[in-house]
Length: 68
Image (cartoon, rainbow, N blue to C red; front, side, top):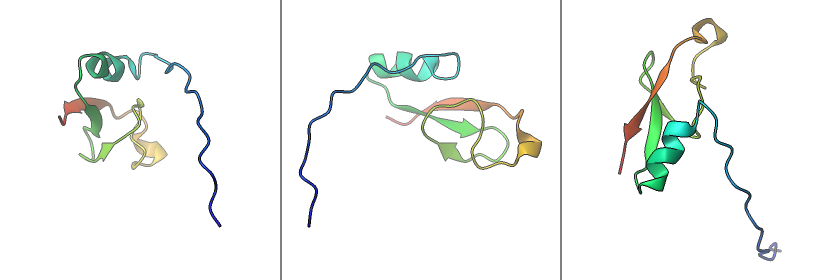
């Protein structure tokens, strides 16, 4: 059994302080992802906190890196 494809309209992205740089780069045709400055792991979707670190490291910043 398979699920039939259904077209869905996507809403506009929510732009806030954590995602603004990502969406600005996307508007220019550049794909950027965040890389944690503490553990050096890349992560997507754009967010302020690293999803790989524990709550002890919650204040570690992340930076956008160009990948395309």
